[in-house]
Length: 375
Ligand SMILES: Cc1ncc(COP(=O)(O)O)c(C=O)c1O
Image (cartoon, rainbow, N blue to C red; front, side, top):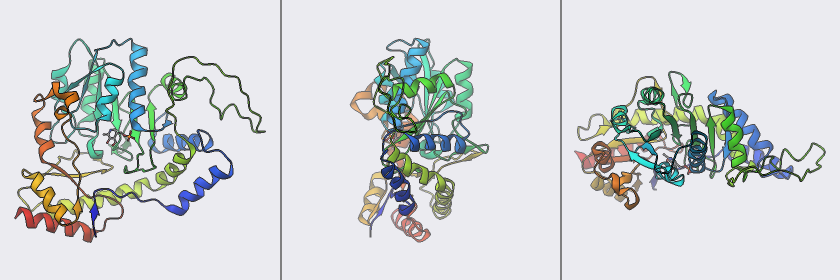
């Protein structure tokens, strides 16, 4: 038997029931289900606006697109970002011809507020912050720095569905938050996401932008009686980035179980910590007071990471690495050697298997295999 780092769980009958409704109504695109999911997401997070999109990546792109136009940012203006992330975070900056400026992370694996402050220049316009593995890190402090320096804060909340800080769902501290409901995330669909602006004007605009710039979507042009009004206007160049009802159907089911599922993840993480805390060679990713992490990942650090990965694989355990320091990639090599802590973590980090099919016995087994190697 193999143990994978991720293995999504779907409540299949409930999912099929929700999907069936779409098929019976002959409406699988953007429409009643996507609207319902948006409402439920606002209710769950307490965020004022939510728009359902086809991935987190496109949401990050739109965030930069809208802010750049609204605030008249110029090509080459700077966005402070982390090297310890999935490349979507940094590609999104480049989509709008802005410049990713890498700041270092701290022991939480998230951006270090001090390093952000040190990177601010005349040309800095925004900070994009990643809650690595579901951790908030020092997000509250970063939010204060952004306010003080008049910078926009974009939260890449791909790992943060269900993360709470001081008992409040994350997202309120940012100008925009973008969640991912990609196949292996805490709220898995197949591919989709949610973009949540603080201000209504941006929410109104993003709805047009995700539907090619058309000012009325097909659903709102179809009346209760089914008569279809064909005429619309096009106000801007937009994209085909909106979500669809099949993904929303899966998301609605996942949302019902999100808190319960995250609790299970946190219980497994506690078990890992308990069993691994007696091994001196292991360092944990630092937790933050008042953060109830969605626990998308459970990460440890070890010096001989690649050897440990081989050993685990020989034992049919397949962990992940989140992430390779992005400045090691050709595209971002101009930032190489500027973030020593991120570079170090990137060489030491392992994401141990963490999903809803995992049992406490599996965790014990994985920890035994690790201990055998590190003893
Ligand atoms: C930190 C981070 N940002 C962005 C993304 C992109 O999300 P999506 O696949 O929904 O576009 C991911 C997905 O893995 C991620 O982990």
